[in-house]
Image (cartoon, rainbow, N blue to C red; front, side, top):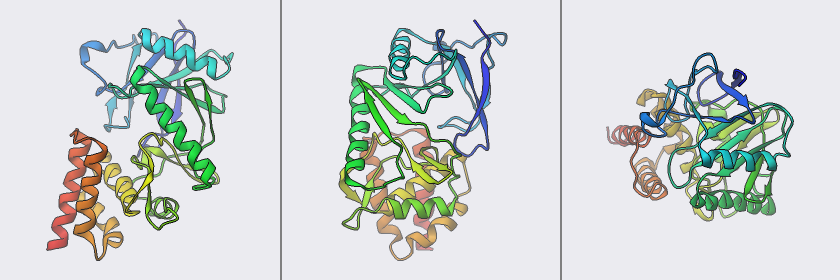
Length: 297
């Protein structure tokens, strides 16, 4: 097996981090320490590949561990490669999402204009179908024209245009303003994306793009500020930023209706997560409590 080759990518607040590409015919995938019990993770020998400290999309400075692909991942890998046109290059990157019923493989091949998303479980197929449906609806409606990537379906695989560019940091005012303006529905409400976070926003050469629409509900309007709160609060929770900094950025947006908006936003997030609590969500709620306290002081 050839040694993995390190490549620079942008994730979250990191200026640049590295992932490792492995031979396409001998897949290994990257997963953070949160993806399953440590006993299930097999560290790759340093002679065969490099396990690098990176910024995980869920935890800052967690070790991304490279694990051998199991049968489900190998099947998804082969399916994704076929959908990508069976590229001849010998290297590819596979990222495995959080363990659970919606777990999927995201497959990136250097030189390909597409990223392939393949379900690892039968129950995850609906998640991919829903994201494809949302892209179809947005494209047909003309909403967010130019702000979403192109896409196409290849059987059960969703191919999404590969957008090059860095992710903005959570305290980017220009990104927050773009989110507020772009995710306005014709009726004055907000388009519910469900996961507007720095890692789902990309600053391309000609403007911002918003990806990962699987949690969106285009039929149900929400307060337009919810998308800005998602971007700032959840991004700040990832980087463990000071609550005062979050308050400073959001105070102008929340002026005059802070408590009402924050309470409604907290209920909105709980509905989206079915009441599940994780570390990122718990840290996000500390910012909400701080914002609420400052409104009463």
